[in-house]
Length: 125
Image 1 (cartoon, helix red, strand yellow):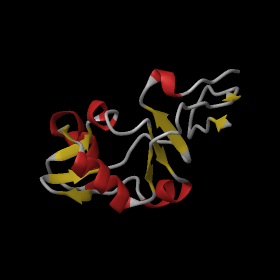
Image 2 (tube, rainbow, N blue to C red):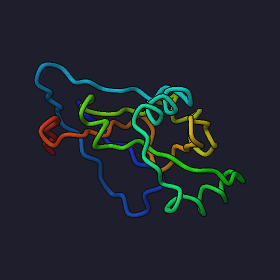
Image 3 (cartoon, rainbow, N blue to C red):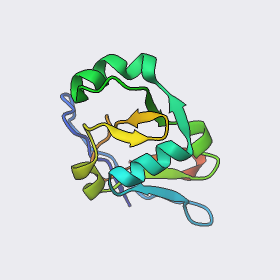
C-alpha cells in the first residue's frame, strides 16, 4: 500500500491511499540519514549552486557549491528513492559535505518515496 504524507500543505483536505505494483520488485534507494543522502548526491551529482545559493545560504550560513541528485541519472539505476522517517528526522536543513561542495535535503515529506518511472507505481484512489 502507498500512503501519501504531506508536511505543511495548507490546502490539503484529503490523502490518496492505494496499491503499488512494481514488476520484478522495486529498486529503491533509502535515505536513512545524512550519509545516505551524501552517497546518493555524490554518485549522481548535479550542480545547483545558481538556483539554491540564496536559500541554502540563508538556511545554513554556508557559501558553497551546492549539489542535488541528477534524478535522470538516478532513474537509470533505481525505480524510486525513499526518505525514511529516521532520514527525515536527521537529514534536512543542514549542509552535508560532498566531494565538490555540499548538499542539503529540502522539500521532502516524512516516509515518502519518489517514484522515478511513471510505470513503476499505480495508485488508485
